[in-house]
Length: 103
Image: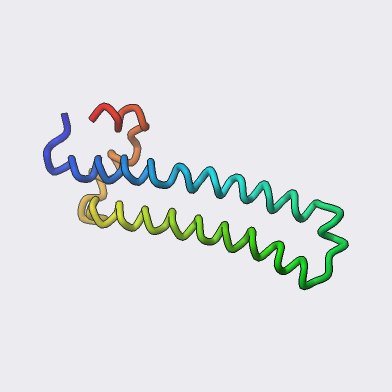
């Protein structure tokens, strides 16, 4: 069993993974949408203004999703202690979801 001092780091890692998994799925989906948009014949027929609006909507969503992933990583890092606890943190981050769930 992990030491009590590791406990908060483990909980933070589990929270982080749960929070970002949904955002990462969304990012993947948005990148597919972006590729489909750019490859679409209708897109090439749009005016510049229409293309800006269409691409901006997708890119803005990707940016927002990435900002949420960064936010959750920052929150996790605050709990895990960054450079001070680098070895402990690496050990925790290498754990797979199953190992993390057993704690």
